[in-house]
Image 1 (cartoon, rainbow, N blue to C red):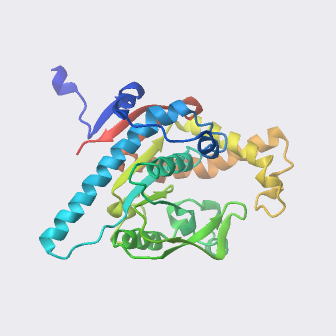
Image 2: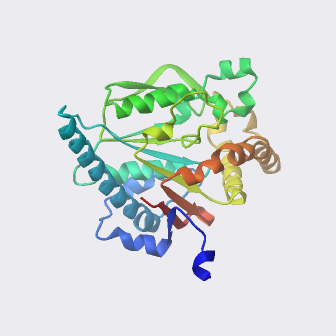
Length: 314
């Protein structure tokens, strides 16, 4: 009876300690300077976090990368076309303020230090947001970050071109200071070994309002979802807003300069209002429902500490 009542799940579950044990002999290759540069805004990354969580993860990713390369060689042999190696694409999804960017930067830093010295490019989906002028004309600037605010077709085309091995792909550059796309500026992605794509909506399914036949997830070799309770993420968002009020918002060219002189009470009220009216809705309607589409879920507790993980069965 107990066996029958056990819930069916496509995931293997790991405590932090169980996951850490899978590190094997993977060395920590980050210097003190590297570690300092990887710190996120209001997210103090500890070396224990790198050793316990991210080193086992990079070991897993290297095994996956090697297996995919072997698969490409096998297919090339079968087809007789000598297929060229194409980038391994990793997707990282999750809420605003949950720590996706830090996770992406840590993985990039660790992967580039493996013995093969792979070239790893990091791309954020912010570059595929529509320009503010277009969002304003559509009356959807207040829903920035929702699926309809992105050029999803362009994003899918980019990831498809990456997996086709196309050279010198251009990605629009987004400025968080300006809160907008920077006209005439591009990030060039030229057939690296690994591409990390980080963004809110990369695991969206076909029912998310996109009218295209293909999804970003169709072209991902591995995907992660960074997760935490909404109450914790909301607090991280408010803390980040307060930090930005005292730093980036003070720049007169900042889109959010109007918030620079808010008192603590006012700033908290504004941040909680934005969370309630925008980010919480997007999280519940569009982001959280994609969690179980990921191959690995990192579950965080307080202080951005990963407490457990779920790895999709093969």
